[in-house]
Length: 110
Length: 112
Image (cartoon, rainbow over all chains, first blue to last red; front, side):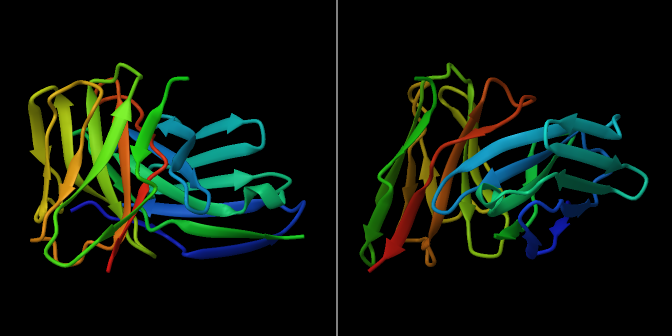
């Protein structure tokens, strides 16, 4: 079955770059997503990438996709304290179901 | 404002009691979803509905029920058969199953 894996925790200093990694198993993924969850809140869509792309940039966010290794990453440039949250990677399969990773808790140290 | 609303924000359930979580959207989305989130785990799909009067089981439907009588509303009932209901419940919707899902703010269910 589908499996999406992420590290549980990441700490960075304010102003540094953060890189959150994700691996997935389903080669029929059509889209891959990054969602952000702040404490006690729902998920906010940050960005997504179509499976035939290898990079997407959106302001401070850069998504890299290595389809051969089934590896997705989210880089946040100039990380701020407001970026502290849980970040979920999710893949959409050919059946249009979304499968989520465990989430990575990003802590930004002032 | 367009969006997805969930109520209540917190809900307490007594043993043996059924409780219903509300999810409403005014985005004119056809598809709606319910997920359960447990600490240190990703979201797991409970039920989804692609259209009014139709719904499908997700990966963990046991102990839950849903209805979809109106396009805007997709309530989730947590029945007494759900033995471990304490979790954060998230509702989502999209225009159709191929598009990006947008999430509500969530309801935290606690058992007394």
